[in-house]
Image (cartoon, rainbow, N blue to C red):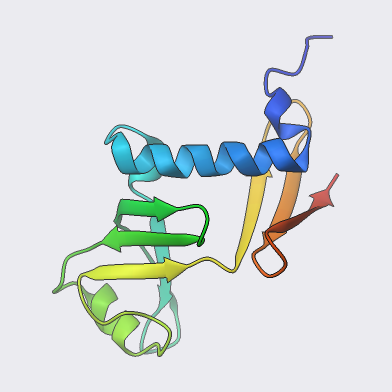
Length: 125
């Protein structure tokens, strides 16, 4: 049996650290997968709409992301209709819950809740 190539995924703390490392890398490295996350919003008909946006800032301490998008895209109109979202081409997202899924030799899924200082718990296994 081969050793687990992702030892950081074994513990909640290191999994959380690794996730934020990847998000922050997306701000600095235009080739990083986290550079262009998918933002899912609800359309005026209540249907899910997922679009690619550009990650420009990430603050681990506050759990805040800043994404940029085209001001004239339908996504902006959808965000205007949602009272918790910003109405301009720069959107600030305040993360309240992170769910991390690691697909490796042993799949792992964890949730981290901002309230209480980013407390995490395993969902699977």
